Amino acid sequence: MQAMSEKPNKIRWYYEGLSKGVFRASKCGDCGKFTFPPTGCCEYCGSWNVENAELSGKGTLLFATHSGSAASHPRFEKAAPFVYGHIRLDEGPIAQAIIQGVGTSPEDLKALYEKGPVPVQAVTLQMDDLPVIAFNIQD
Amino acid sequence: MRNQLNERVAISGVGCTHFGNLMETPEIKDMSLQELTAAAVKEALDDAGLSGQDVDAVFAGNAMVHSSQLPATYSQISKWTGTQFKAGVHFEAQCSTTNVGLAMAATAIAAGVYDTVLVFGVETTRTKVKDYSPYEREPISHQQSWLWTDMAVNQAYGVPQGYDIFSSYNGLVALGYCRKHGISIEDFDRGMFEVCRTRRLHGSMNPKANIQETLEEAAKRKGISDAFEYWQSENNPFVAWPSRLLSLVTTADGASAIVLTRADAARDGRSQPVEVKGFGINATDLPWYGEDPTMWESDKRAVESAMDMATIKATDIDYLHTHDCSHISGLCTAELIGYLDPGTALTAARDGRLRFDGDKPMSTHGGRHAFGHAWAASAGSDTYEAVLQMRGKAGKRQMPKPPEVSVIHTHGYAMIGTVIVLGGM
Ligand SMILES: [Zn+2]
Image (cartoon, rainbow over all chains, first blue to last red):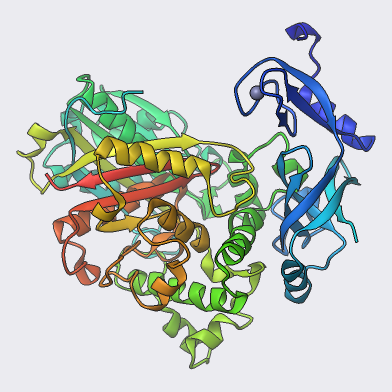
């Protein structure tokens, strides 16, 4: 465990990882689970005994819908409407994020829904001011 | 935790303003926030037969300080409600605020610290302070409203990376529900129409509701004779497929208030008291659910705590409100509580069972869609409705048999699952 004074800002560390295409998390030294995105403790058992870790970015898209046509946040004005999905990562955590590789129309989303869960891979989406995580559908 | 109230606590008075827009809605037009709050507080104090000087403490709820600009609310409101020289605190639990306040008040009374506590919530989600004026207001833009509201949602990773309330709260939950129960998207759409139609019917019978127009009337206004055709028209677009606009909250300005007191003292009050039998509060952060979007762990735990404290079973519940910012999410909660059987909520809506005169009445004030949503004041509006129903004073929308046991569930964005159980004395 690092001394408090040596700890970097976890939030900055996560986004710096994203800018390099790395998906950073923390791993619990007590229960072994991943907290993603990372915090300073284990979100499952409350232990402070956590270490920096990286996830593969591989996962399964369980469900996908779309955002409102007017973005709730200025950062996503140009991107809206976008597909937004519910994902189970291979290492265990559940994530919700922008999905690429399918359209936002009801027809496209219905076809995807009827297909059932599909594999996805995390990628970095560079917005004007911040790298954010997105997931590409793997065919 | 022991999870028990050591003394019996009652609601002796309730108050709630019309929910609407401080710049447009006739009943509240041009009121200051101080006056809006005072209107709800006066109604509650009158109902209890008390003055502001009879209470021991004031728990003042306001979530979006950006639009109200009234921090230290308990202090700034005290000269408008006659409650100065009392203990007080400004607190927020977002859209669960007033009922979390109720739970804090019940705790303080049952502990023997206070005899009587006033809880109020005030919120403006349609209008904000204009420039530096002490009395002029101006509208809040759609984006501004969500930016401020979403400050209550994961600011480290969720909101910065594209979090979308319509997806997380509506579309993904809807798809999870359809998949889990084998419901077609077409049947889902029809069911959601019926839920909205029911809530609008309730709103039309509630003189304080934000929207008092039925779906049928709205369709006619647009020149469409069939309400379901209106539902599927451009007037009701998908906001997060398969969820549509009219399955959502409508924003409002409003205030509500609750007076709580020792149960033995409440009997001497002016109106029929209602007992606080139990409560449960449980918070989490995004994502609100695991693989199954219909099962929210924080709600499950809040429900279990509340029902354990109140020693009731799901079959004891006569009236239920679940947080319905998103109609599908509210139905999932009703099934989680056990009020409705799993996978039956949409059929129950189509069969009219969720109406005020049905066998599983829900949200008879109109819920977040028709009654409207004024964040910190809304849970108080739900409690207000439950108390009116239990007293047999809910007017045109009165349940034929006043409920003995009422359960109110709210979601404090995001996410504070809060459940309170009310019972007859
Ligand atoms: Zn752990």
